[in-house]
Image (cartoon, rainbow, N blue to C red; front, side, top):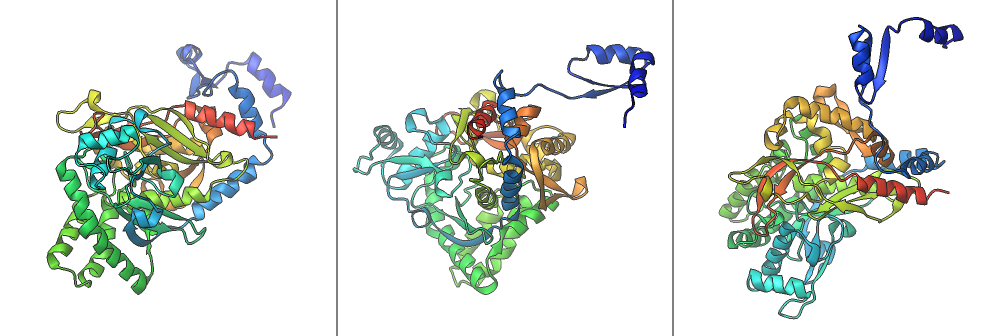
Length: 482
């Protein structure tokens, strides 16, 4: 305990050590007098004059501590099993003309270039338009030339997630995952690869041909292989593979090389036993094994399952979704139901493919930030220093990023661990109040789509959500306190 004599010493004796925060004027002056100075990286809270009162209301909410413990425990306990591969029409009940997209809800008029491009491609894929011009005309009118009405909705509203533009149309096949602990399900389409692909907004004939092969060959063969695996040895434990891939140099968002290899190793024996044409089996194995991002579309629904389990706990400040549609960035919070808190999306900074440059990049897009929301991806960059070659930066940046994310999260994942940090659990459970108090924003590593519809991928990099999403969420939480 500090006595009065100790406090008096602060006035009469020269300090031997001083902690400083804010501008460097005082610290520099003390350092010049040979005083030991510890500089604290402190920044004022996010937002305006109303934020202190809102923070006070939320932080003193008697429900908050228990509510966050409940929500986080559900997230950490959730499992993720691969149980089937089916078309979206079957898994989600999509009818012709119904399309889902990444991020918070948006209409075609406000849609970004890559989202417009992906919707145009999906119209052609579904036979609702003969060419891109007809497709765009139908989307603008809200009705296909053949008469079907067109509807758009967020993937998150249908227990689904989609990378980049995230467009899901009825005939696209995808993975079905189940949470054996809480009973939830989640759906994500099969990954097409990199470059000119639908999820990056490309819609050329090669893109449509690949998607039709995926529906005719890839999806049905994977369905038979997965169902055979389930019957023979039970569902494939995706959470266990995610835990292993973190130990093997993946972070689960932009680097899924180890995860993809482990998935292929599990499914190849089943594929070989199907009696399918050898050329089809070879094409399927070659396609999956040749795409290092193939496993991303299993990581995303695994994280979706976990975070959905943490939803709807009154008083909880836990973020349960971060998603972008290429125009808006939106977050959802456990204690505020299905409300979206949105602001204009930022543009990622990183490395570009070929001759592309910053002017070619569209603002942030995709549901893949569900990985960061679930405690991996950018939050687990320390597990994957090689990722900096893809998104820019140095290996030390990866370590520093993960360490910084512990300051804005409610806990550490007991299964997802980082070897270089002594097998410490990944920072998990973004806390709205911690983000606002510290001014530390979540870090997301992501691909970059071309801003012009039809371009495809132009690069990859790092991005943070707009701070307004968190100050709006804080206001929403404050309005729900007693």
